[in-house]
Length: 246
Image 1 (cartoon, rainbow, N blue to C red):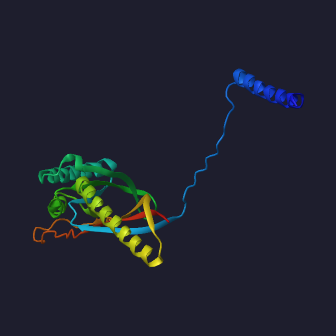
Image 2 (image 1 turned 180 degrees about the vertical axis):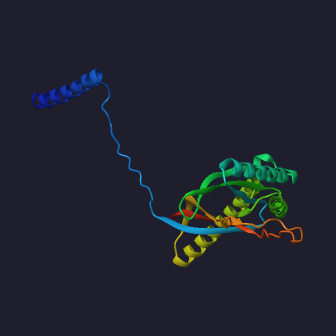
Image 3 (image 1 turned 45 degrees about the horizontal axis):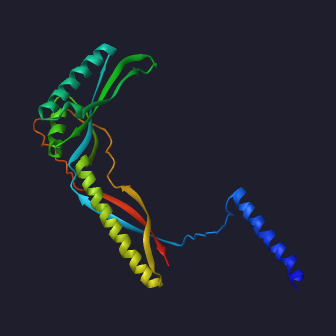
């Protein structure tokens, strides 16, 4: 009987000896476990709109001087004299010099019926940021009185601090609008909303564009003062929320 068991025992002992020697020489036998992570990709998207309206606190406008003469020098002298008077008058109203900027200075030849140069036209335009905004009418009246014969490009906006405050209020309204819509739609559709995983903002520019630069007649002391109405501007934004659903 022992002889019949001797051969299997030798094989078993030999196997374990081989395993022992293999571990000693090459380290432990690696053991692998495959880990699979699943990501839920079903998302529910909803848009919300927020709008906030407020009176603007900054006005932007342009005034210009254009003169014609037989020579470039004469036309330039006339324009430079008038433009300097306009600038001084605007500064006297309390407008800082950093808010007055030359946006155009041009010299153009004028032609007669024979297509020969008969003179020259020189123009200078000034872009003005008016703050406080209630000085807009006084700036226009002073400019035309001091020699500006072009007025326009009037637009209204918000100072940086006011704009940031209004934008944040519009965002808050848009997010709340999106959440309300999401809850309502989810309830109607019978789905369950998870956490918000993405937020995208799409702001909208609702400010009116500038009005064109128009020719203005010389100042008339009997004319009524300028009466520009600033009205209100609207800031709006659209927020897209993306929810996980389960």
